[in-house]
Image (cartoon, rainbow, N blue to C red; front, top):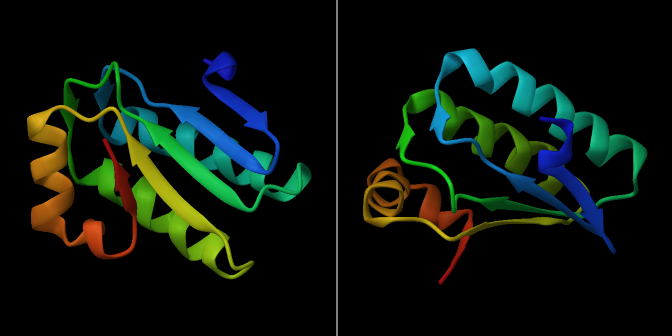
Length: 102
């Protein structure tokens, strides 16, 4: 799963798994934090292309990375979401702090 984290310029690209629940959330959060701290990353992009299911732990992943990256003046982006994931980001209020890209 390490291949799901990639640094491009000052962006950390995180390819999210098919299912995001509490089993994956700590792994994703810990690895994203490691990449942020050790690679001079100032922005995070979450790619939901493969994601079919996400529970509240996915929201926690995004909020945690937002809190960390915003301290450095960075931004968080979400890309390639299906209708359900987009709806979850909207009803959770994450669309106010995360830039949703089509």
